[in-house]
Image 1 (spheres, one colour):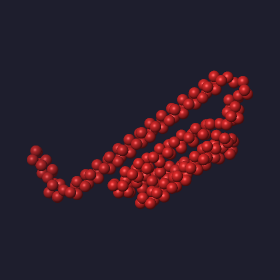
Image 2 (image 1 turned 120 degrees about the vertical axis):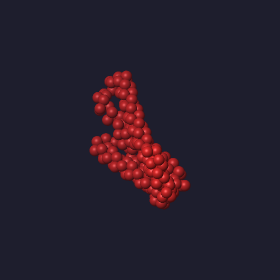
Image 3 (image 1 turned 30 degrees about the horizontal axis):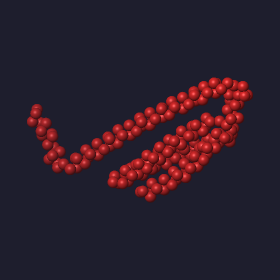
Image 4 (image 1 turned 180 degrees about the vertical axis):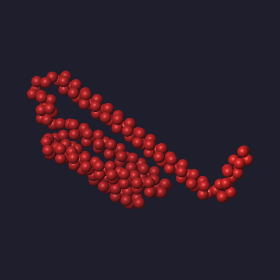
Length: 180
C-alpha cells in the first residue's frame, strides 16, 4: 500500500512542478493564450485534488502503526496545494503593465493615489477571500473529525459487544426488570 502512496507522491511532485511553471507564465500572457493556460492550470489543479483524495484513501488503508508518518506527509501536500491555489488566483488577476494600463485607462496621467487605492482594495479582497477559504477548511476539518469520531465510537461498541459473553449482553435487561 505504501508503494501506491509513493507513486501518488511522485505524480503529485510532477504535477505541482508543471502547475508552478504555468502559474508563473500566466501574468505575462494576454488574450486567448492566457485563457487557454488558465483553463489548463485549472484542469491540472483538479487532477491534483483527485490525487490528494486517492492519497487520503491510501492512508486510511495503512495499518495504524504506520499511519502517522503518512498523515503528516499528506497534510504537507494539502498545504502545498492550498499555496498553489492562492498563487493561481493571484496570477489570474495579475496583469502585465500593458493590460493594466488598458483596463485602468492609464495614459500616463492617472494619479498615483488612484492606483494605490485600487491596489489596497484588491489586497483587501484577496485577504477576505483567504479568510473565507480558511474558515471553510476549518469547518470541513471539524466535520471530518466528527465523522471519524462517530466511526470510532461505533467500532468500539462493536468490539465491546464481541468481547462480552451472551449472559453479559442480556444482564442489562435482567437488571432493568428488577426496578419495575
